[in-house]
Length: 280
Ligand SMILES: O=C(O)c1cc(=O)[nH]c(=O)n1[C@@H]1O[C@H](COP(=O)(O)O)[C@@H](O)[C@H]1O
Image (tube, rainbow, N blue to C red; front, side, top):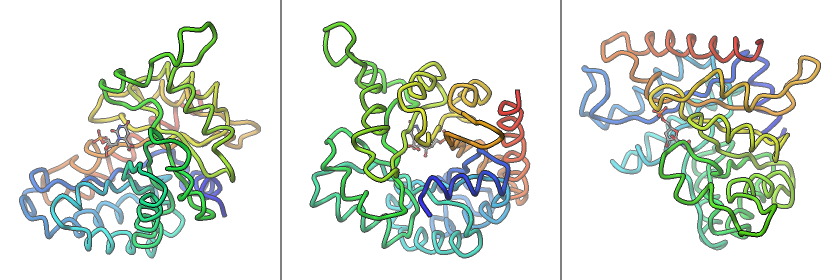
């Protein structure tokens, strides 16, 4: 099964476009766990257990684990997600990008060490930096395209040349992911919910690839505008999957002992908001 088929199946099964991002930060953990980096697995596993029937995907962010030497907990968490929620694809958010020989090691890390279904990548170093990931059949890779942060303006909307008709850099990345770079249908694009007009533009250039859309919740992105700009369906079937990520607004919904239940409540509210936008 390809990564895109896995997404479609999870979307159908759970009736959701929501991805819960797992970004554990010791300073933000619920009061009983606060400051204790040895509790990242317990915290994230509780969130996973409380939301697994509400999501299209989970997205652990590797930096939160690696920064405090908690990679072994991330390995356990990946194993836990694969075992308890086998129908929910896991996107390892690593934003890698390096020469081919090093990219091979990063691909091995994501797909063999951690057993991720998909990884996030920077396309800045070009196709040979992406190719090693495509050798893993059935696995996916989301390329950063029009990111949610304001600094994305520094490069992504720059025009490639002053000649008439030349695309902006992020449009060019979208065209590469839709066409020549997408050797076996494994590529997707990252577009921020904070830029719905650009999501629409990316969708026009890349009509069928999956979009990972972070930025709703804590970054204030517009969930409804996001769905309208990026989601496409025909005859009741999704033609172009979107994966709308929210991390802090879900996982830190409560700092009390009820944090997992509060995460569930917040996830239901966001899932329903996205569903309503799909239907409208
Ligand atoms: O690739 C990403 O996931 C990503 C791309 C982007 O453009 N913006 C962005 O916020 N992200 C990630 O999405 C998550 C957003 O977290 P919240 O703002 O807490 O919902 C973080 O893990 C970011 O690293």
